[in-house]
View 1 (spheres, rainbow, N blue to C red):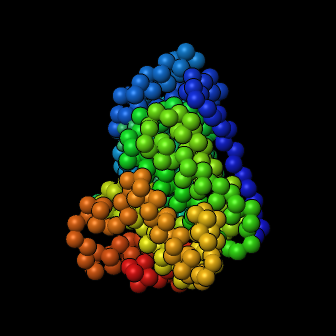
View 2 (cartoon, rainbow, N blue to C red):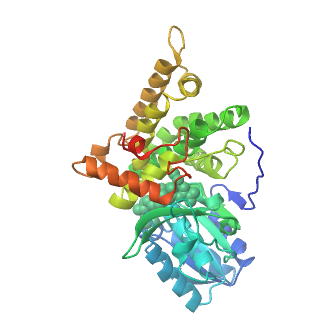
Length: 395
Ligand code: NZQ
Ligand code: ZN
């Protein structure tokens, strides 16, 4: 276990019907809110009108910015920031999936940021200058997946003429003041998007589980708890979207998986995410779908270096018997079962299923370069266990 400091100041209001509290919550932070939404799902479901009603009842005026796309672009963030400045908004509400919440966080910081906001994002393992200030951020997730509602990270795609890169920022000023989490809002999430969310949640904890150090028994059990719970309740949410109990369990799991608690002390890194971000940047693949392809493939590669860890996963998650097997074969059996689980809920597990078309050696090499353009260690490797050289990412 490593030394660590843990801080997460986001107030969490969780439970079916919580949306009604939005106005009261926001009024504690501002009088004029920039209400950020995506491509229209919240309007279709009626959640938008309910949110506006609650805000108006609490005397909070609303400036709407809609149209944040999945895998949100920096240019969109910049347009929204202009609006927030022009309208002198004093609080930002992100109501939607991870894309909307992430965009909202970066909008809130860009309002005060001197210079181009690309400089606050990770490039080649470095950030030029982190923001020191942000407008108060309130998150209202409508999809259980990223955990963005209660963490200080945001993933943004730089879409300048000269640079195209899906990268991220993680810094304290981006912690939402409050996450208003109403799992009823996730009832309208389509089956396949629900399945992608399930895969994302599991991958958030497997990254720590497999890339972290040894000797973290409590963190291991937290991660296993999240995986087992999501494997039990996720398929129920996929097969019957209106099963509110399933929606509640999956939503809570998404928060627990990435609010920092599961990863503390493990020296967490996220190579599967970094590789996937390249796919979603270049081909606009949904994040969870890309992870379903990359994670089992990465696991098969990494298991060779740490078979005992993967054998533990096989035994504890799937109850696979170790009788007569060495760690590596046990590990591979566990990974096969994990992949079968992903397929059973409808996730793709092969690159060919992502609609990318024919994949060439040049493309693989370019993807690896792009991944390392976001983050690499001093030796030019992708951090993880083991750290990956370009050739290994390609493999
Ligand atoms: O845009 P709208 O119309 O809202 O539709 C969205 C979008 O098409 C739809 N949706 C959301 N809530 C819905 C709904 N449809 C019906 N009913 C609802 N209640 O779902 C689609 C996908 O939305 P998106 O926000 O893109 O999905 P997700 O929550 O999976 O977020 C993915 C983004 O988050 C980043 C990913 O890289 C990706 O850009 N991540 C952010 C993280 C963080 N901040 O900590 C960590 C994650 O690992 C991840 O990288
Ligand atoms: Zn993720």
